[in-house]
Image 1 (spheres, rainbow, N blue to C red):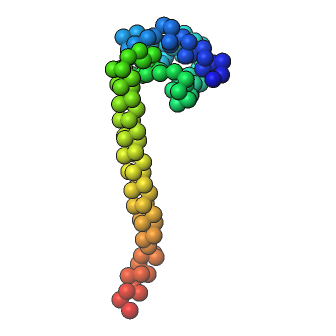
Image 2 (image 1 turned 180 degrees about the vertical axis):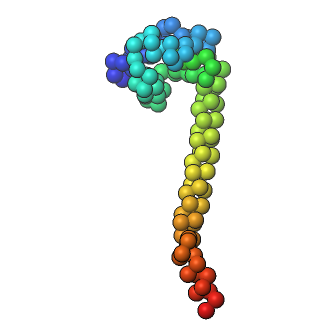
Image 3 (image 1 turned 90 degrees about the vertical axis):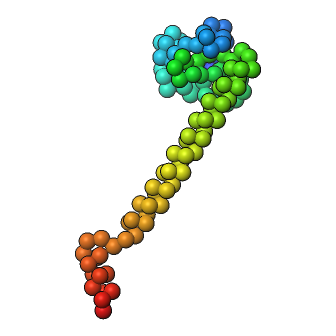
Length: 120
């Protein structure tokens, strides 16, 4: 864990324990004087590497999970996001396949030529 990640984890663990004490992303960014991109990256690293149980709620912000209920809530939120992203990825694949199929179809003059050739 780097120094910035340690600073974030320590702050959230000491001042924002439990969802009732959550801090918004923007407020945390201002409070710790860390730009938003770096803050998101650091929180992601902390959780991904198992360094700290930082949870988040889209309406209230970041907090440190202190009980089974908050852990489960955060886990379920992550799983829901994964499922939504998976659906989005599937839609992207379908659209790309459709685009490839559309590109393979003759267009304009080429389409007219194929029509003429079909009648011969």
